[in-house]
Structures are given as structure tokens and as C-alpha cells.
Image (tube, rainbow, N blue to C red; front, side):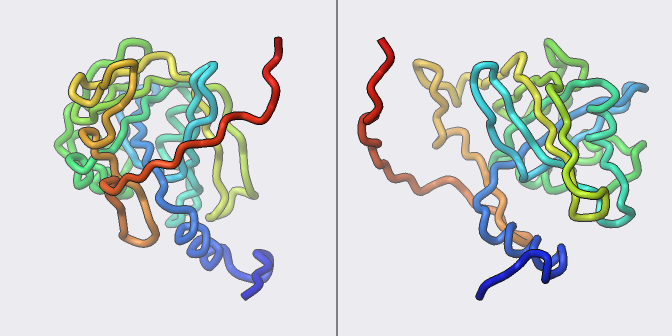
Length: 211
């Protein structure tokens, strides 16, 4: 089948993308608004950008129910900071609860019975139950689309502090993936565990190094 995205609905294109770009890591983003109200929500359009400076991105979309802006994006625009918490098998159910569309005044930490922990460099709290937390300062927000449902934003943040639980840290700053037990997002209501590994060593670079 050959598909021109312009010939199908945004919903149909959404199914193709979400079913093909898998598994997707999950950014569990905690923020705080101008009044000090906390917010916590998961986003599966999430990845790393680079390591110097250490930079992550995630992509909130236009809310489908009312074409509104999600609280996470509003808070980041106002405060220029956020925390990305890594989702694990042990926190999956709580993460799913925080995916619920709730009124702005509802605290997702309390709703999901999670423990907010004080961050060191940003005002937004981190999720105590998450073994890895990245405190981030906003680099930029990129608008994508026309603002209708299906459109979204790319939120890029520089990591200014990292919290890593001792039990998931190996020597030389490596993460023990078997202990971390992260989960990934698939299509629909489906998720995946990271429990099947195989190794492929890369060939040496064929480009001559600069003197």
C-alpha cells in the first residue's frame, strides 16, 4: 500500500506512526505552575538530543478533547524548567494514572499516590519512586502544525542535574538496564518490557581521525 499523508485523516496517520515507531521511551514530566501547583504527565514522543550540553526533548500534543494546551506545556512556558522522570515496571500503574486528563487544579502526585521529592536546581519536584530523574532548563519550544488536534510542540531542555538511584548505577557511569526495568510505549493500550537483549558490535570508523 502506498500512502500520501494528505489523503488520509490525522487519526489514521496517527495509527500508522504509533504502530511503527516502537518501542518509544516515556518521559514522565513533572512541572510546577506560577502558583506552585504541581503537575505530572507522561509523553511517549521522547528522546535524547545530544550530550554536550546534555539535552533531551519530548513532544506534547494538542489535547484532543478540547484542542487545548496541556498543563505541562503551559507550566514550562511560564517557569522555563521541568523534570523528566524515567518510567519503570514498578511505576507503570502510577504513570498510567497520571495520563488521565484531569482539571488543572488536581495534583497528579496525590492522584497517583506518588511522592514528590525536592529537586536541586529547579522548582519542579521529581518523582521519588522513579530511579532516574533529569532536572532540565528549557532551551526552546518548537511549534509544529496549525494548532489543531494532531499538532504539537517539541520541547527541548538542557539537563542541569541528574539523580540516579545507587541500585541502577554500574561502574563508569553505566546504567544497569536489567535492574532499571524501564518500559516502552507501543500502540493502543500496549506497552513493552525491556527483557530481551542481544549484542552487535559496530565496525571501527572508516573516517580518518583529525590530527
